Length: 490
Image 1: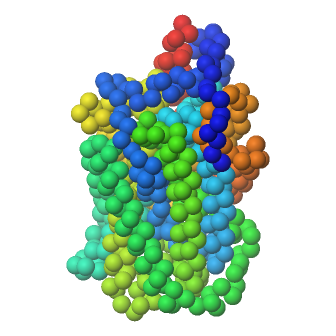
Image 2: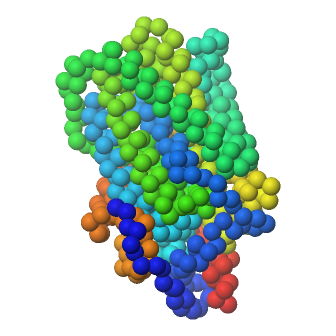
Image 3: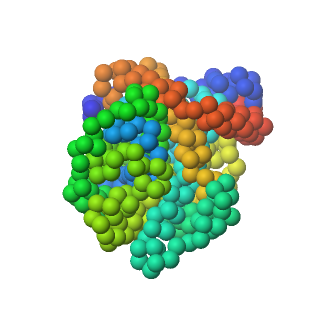
């Protein structure tokens, strides 16, 4: 709920001195909210530019979210949940909703680029902030690669339906899937990089156009798919029980990754305190409604037993329902644009998170250097894009999806804790949006995150443990000693 009558923020007392760069001091070092806000936009050699409206922020979040779950992951979730995949989407959406409320409050209170990394830095200390930031690197960086992998499949469908040729498997599949390199996945990441290097405003305009196209494509699918709707396909609604629905819900949480992308634009928004909470909530509502609608039509048009990975693409359903390839080809074109917008928006979020971490000294300065001409973190954008492009070209989709989900759930769980901590430690701060019912909704958000994490498989947990171990090694060897708060203590 909106809260315009809160008292003005008070000056936070300076953090107590600690004994230098040690794990114990890292736990105690918090970055004051006022300092986070005061440093907003400042980077090495220049500043980010405030140019994004509420509409553009909403489009960034929709662009980063809408499309992945429907165009890429739906075919893998239906065999797990059956027709109850719609319930799985709702479970995943509820997880995102409660966390989104916490994001909305913190984004309006601490309008900076670091998203949940910055929120935890102000509330739970540097070490926890690093863990959260490292999870965000997994969430954003790896999800860019995962989405890019799915882009190649629809590009081949579009090429097949228009000019009758496809990219050979050797150049459109990762080595683990029998190919040499997934070239389309690499190309779409590099194209997104080119847009981002042009500036935030230009990238936002391109993203808005692509979001409109993707929404139109999904509405077209629903209109055509409904013609082939068979109520009998819902006769055995939950064939694999609630266990299957829960597992699918954890898998489909990947579909909601990116709704928090607007929070990474806190230092480029024209009116962040007002617009960020609105953009986050509005984007989540739009995305959830479209996901449930499209999933319901898809299962109604195709029996759930026919779904199996990429063979159950929305274009295949369209072709089957209409008996012709025209609508399927048209949808494939929409999917190509749709998934490209996800890559663009998520890649944007990743570069801004690393920008904030670099400013704090926790990652190399290259990520925080701002180009004076375009007002963008140029070097960081190039480095991140090349890393994500190589990852997309070399790693299969399925392995990327679950790894991304667990990192995101962990970061979201921390955000739900952070909003409660800030309520108790800084109750006098101005909050343009407040999560209703006190600590109840953040507690539910935390619980849903843990529930979905538990439903991920052991291999995903092992990969996550390895990722976190690598992150902690990097922090203790590099970030802990180069942190700006640590050097200020000496």
